[in-house]
Amino acid sequence: MKHNIERFEAYIPIGQLLAQYFDFALTHSKCSQCPGYQKTWACPDFDFAPADFWNEFSQLHLIVDRVSCASAATAEEAQNRLFAEKKRFDAEMLELEKKSPGSYGLAAQECVACKKCARLSGLPCVHPDIMRYGLESIGILAVKLVEDQFGFSAQWSDGVSVPDYYLLIGGVILKE
Ligand code: SF4
Image (tube, rainbow, N blue to C red):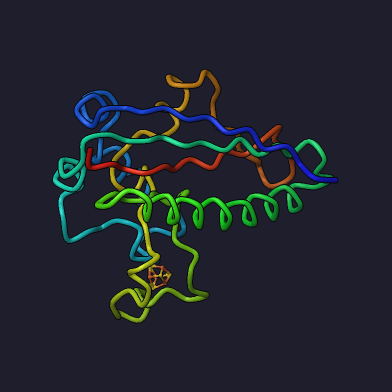
């Protein structure tokens, strides 16, 4: 059975975004507790200041897909659905990026383009054309942002439970 996906969108000026939702010290501290920390080039630490990165742009076109897990029989099935939808979502953000010159398409969390990231071998990214940062990796309190904009929160599984839905949080950062 095909699962339901709902899309939510908002436009937020970068000044407002940084004032209300930028806290790289906090997101970095959360990232450092993740098993994937520093395992892809899309994750911190970076060789640039995330605040400087954001200040190159004027507004965020926030895009969130709420992917229903209602028909998933197990946590694994729900997780597999999320991974499949993430690939679709990330590819769409890259396509949207192409439509707005100078923009930046955000991935929904970590980069999964390669089976083993070149960072683990101390080598540069092999696909900088498709590697994109996620909102949280560059300092945005993404869950709070979604809560404030759309009135719902993220859900997680404890490894056994099946949440009502998973969120794919991304979008495009625009120059104009
Ligand atoms: S594209 Fe490949 S090498 Fe680059 S960050 Fe992603 S996984 Fe790593």
